Each structure stands twice: as C-alpha cells, then as structure tokens.
Length: 151
Image 1 (cartoon, rainbow, N blue to C red):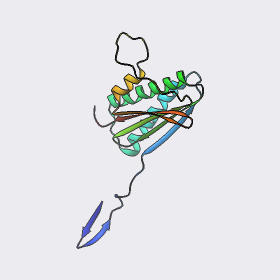
Image 2 (image 1 turned 180 degrees about the vertical axis):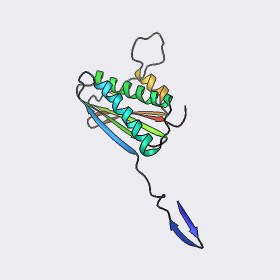
Image 3 (image 1 turned 60 degrees about the horizontal axis):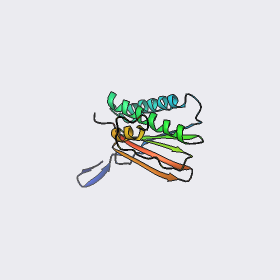
Image 4 (image 1 turned 90 degrees about the vertical axis):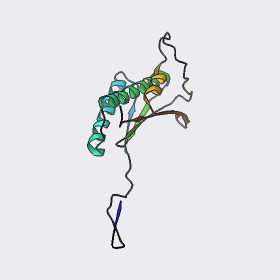
C-alpha cells in the first residue's frame, strides 16, 4: 500500500509481496506414515493460524486432514518408494501436493455408492476447489487446493 501526502509518495512497506508458507515432509511408507502426515498437516494449519492469521474453521481443517489422508494413502498403496507431502498456504487457501515414484496417473471412477474402495480421488474432488495430476521426473504429483475461508 502506498499513501500520497501532498504529492509525495510514502511507501508503507505493506505493498511488498509475501511468499506463502511452505513445508514439506518425506515419508518412507513405514507403518504410521499416514498418521504422521495428518499430524504434519495439523501443525501446518496451526502455523498458518499463527503466522498468517488464517481463520480455519473445523470444517476446513477436517477437509485438509481428509485430503492429506487420501492422497498420502494413495501414494502409499500405489507407489514402490517413498513419497513427499508438500503443503503451501496463505490465510485463504491451502495446497496439498503429494509426489510419488509411480508415473501412472490415477483413474477417477464415476460415482458409485455400491463400489467398495477406490473413492479417494472422488472424496478429494468433493472437498477441493481444484485438483490436478501431472507426471513429474520422479513419477507423479497429485495436487489439491482447498479454500480455508468458508465453510
């Protein structure tokens, strides 16, 4: 923001772009990794509340933790190696990205309440504003953007 006083421009310092908060964690696929990923995400949300003054209601927090759980579970089940959880957030949105070593892109199945299993991406798509999947040099990245400021 810039204020003008008698034709003189006075910079306030608030017009400097601010980088989003970013954190990443590496998981080996050992038992307990999915719970660790949820805990990592919960700590990240608390940091967003503290450092970004983000208002994250219980519904948004539940959505973030469920999306993390689903994406990390998929990486755990469908890749043969470690995976990375990357979180990026501001006061209004949080992006969850999971990288794994399997280059096969996940399939999205049509809604079918009778189907047992394979509802992970369906759940993520219902909770996120945007979902993207892309191949990367190490395998693939699945990304979901979640709005934090409404519920």
